Length: 190
Image (cartoon, rainbow, N blue to C red; front, side, top):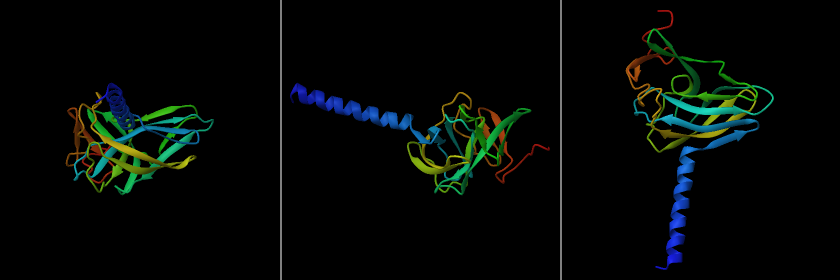
């Protein structure tokens, strides 16, 4: 094989690998002044009643917008939730009003804080797969995105086991109770 042909093949392989690694790591969606960066969801077993999903929202406009929820063919619905800590117990609760993205602001939906919750997923979320969803915003309206399924290696959680328990979840040795999903063990009033 000639050296020119070898070089051409090597460059083609390098470009292909770069393209695939870029697509899997950094994907963005935009509508108007709103940008949605790297939507992703954790690997989840098929029996999980919920699944967390995460992304970063940037509003470059002059007016605030609000993410109120969404839909996907693979779950009953998508809700905005928040995780808070109290007395060593993390609690997740829905945010029916959604999460506001102020004008000129960036909001990260991440494990351990505000996040999206897929309610009653109809399929197992397998690493490397993706799924389409429609996010609903008060001003921007419906925005089509694609979530990548990946393992969570965040230092905040330590592992990817959120929502795998029977009534509680254990992440990094901390138990989390979800007051909104129907397997409530403990409420904020208790």
